[in-house]
Image (tube, rainbow, N blue to C red; front, side, top):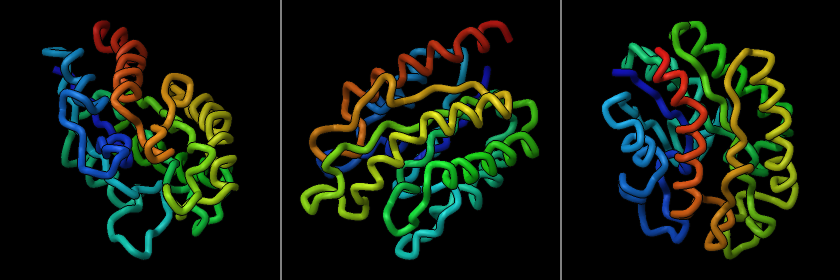
Length: 209
């Protein structure tokens, strides 16, 4: 039985775009992936709303990915795969980070996996794009117009990082869009599409192992 750690933010947690809670296991992409893998693998869900790669959220504790990932790598060991999908929250205007700076945070996470769980294969997933209107008051003013462009720039940066570090890569933005309801989170259709694509990316490695 293989073990797969899914490390991400609210789109791994399964936050419902209408703001009324969390999608059930039958809807969120991690749960769909578990069903598709059936007896071949165990999915370890580690999604947290507001999680960043390295930035400190002054309003919420425990959001820095680099602080928690090493603990999770040890507590859930042994791990065969680690799927990392972070970066959306790093685009918030309070951090003022470019895609390249966010990428440096992602590289720290990859380095932690390689150091603590060297046997694990890594699938780096660049997040879905932010909607063009996400920064407006009716959606999420923690973002800005500039945040939208930064989210668009992440794909190329992450792809380059994945190649450099010999990781598998997937752009979530190639298969899913943010919900019209909040311009930020996956809807039911998006969760299904992402789960299906991740499954196709990793099933051959799982079956061959």
